[in-house]
Length: 72
Image 1 (tube, helix red, strand yellow):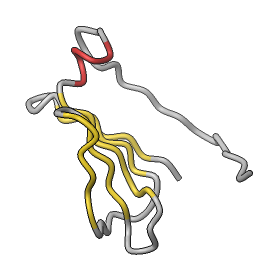
Image 2: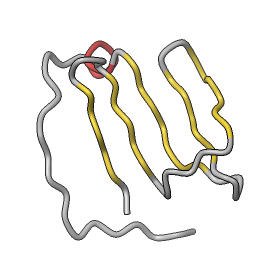
Image 3: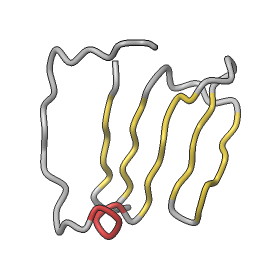
């Protein structure tokens, strides 16, 4: 299940793909980081200055239900 979390005070958006255990983080840019788990797969992505990068004034609240992703 994919989980999104947003910290309005820090203006940070985090997308969780897997468990919260992070083995290492790779900074892709000053505001983007990718977290890898012990299995070597991406466990999450962090976006700082989210409102600026997404070009919106406020991150909207959203509820996503029953969305399934297909493995290729």
